[in-house]
Length: 451
Ligand code: PEP
Ligand code: MN
Image (cartoon, rainbow, N blue to C red; front, side, top):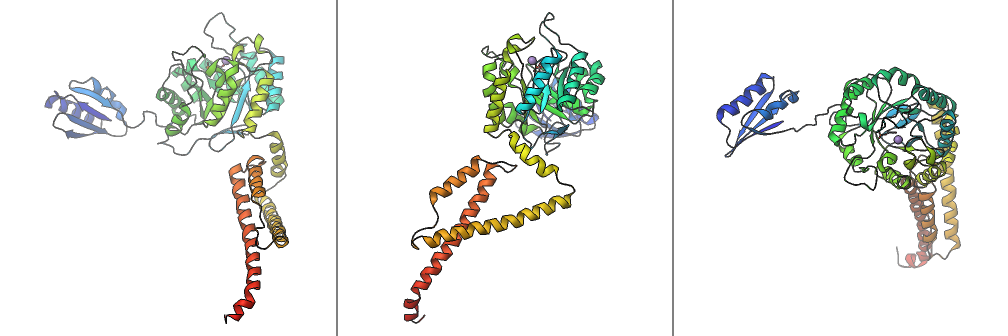
């Protein structure tokens, strides 16, 4: 912390600041300039003297280290991964799509939605049980029965469920019925609630307050973390600005900004962020592109008749189309890839067994690579020795196929690197062949020259 004194500050005022700093067990370093004195305050809890700004002679107090500690990347450089029932959010993991109705309205509505969003590739089911509505006359949610329905949907469809809490007295019920506790935008600064969910063992998805700065939001996360719960997920859901064309202004720049400040996973909510169905898809794609770890999207079987947030809810078809697009752009893995990978992974026992299978594959790969090289050589043999055996167009097509048709954990870039190496090795084989032919043909002349 740096305390900047006024140019008019007296020696007594400077001494006054220094005395208070030292009384709090902190150190004060004075830098006396021509015009003014600046005091550096160092110690483990400089916040204890945050009132220095009110002392006579003080112009400004500047904080240097972040006021949030546990949420800060300075405190923990490696990114946090939150795991819930086999779903992982955070560094290097696939984009997690959470989807479901704004509010749970009935068993049929919830189950139908759960079945559909699961089929389309969502990994978490959302559904509000307690709705914090702007008007007391609006639908407030079904309450506890809705939590029980979410529990039933979890058991039926195997999807972890997330729901919003509005009262700290409900923590035990949420612990019993849901997998992730959501703290909504309106409660981001409800510190009693934050401390209560901080004592829970369930991960917490903390939405950004309607007018909260990133720092205030991270301090809210700090409440949860410092109460003992390390599994906090931040959710950007739009902030209130002068713009009225959208319900809120979805601040996607918050995602890269947060990446520089915190290790916590980040989810984007394009539903509340825009308030209009037509804008949800594009902003969901943008959220994925900007590097969010997850998306949370409102989906309803009949948005026109939804009891809350129908305007921004996607119908099943629109949600399916959005998931297709997320798959096409490879933010989300397609189901056939999941299925193809599942037996390979599931059928394996211990590490040794997995390693044996890798050795097997390596042996087969080596054979296949040699077979491929032999064929490339054969092509070269059949061609004019002065022409290249490889065909640049075919090579380019192969690399393009590798870049677009990947079906596994390897990224298109990684797969392309492998094929590229293979092509270069094939060309070397072909080149060696043509050089050996030309050497043979040169030989009579070479021997004639006495070499
Ligand atoms: C919700 O997710 O339904 C909700 C009320 O969100 P927010 O707190 O972002 O308004
Ligand atoms: Mn909603």
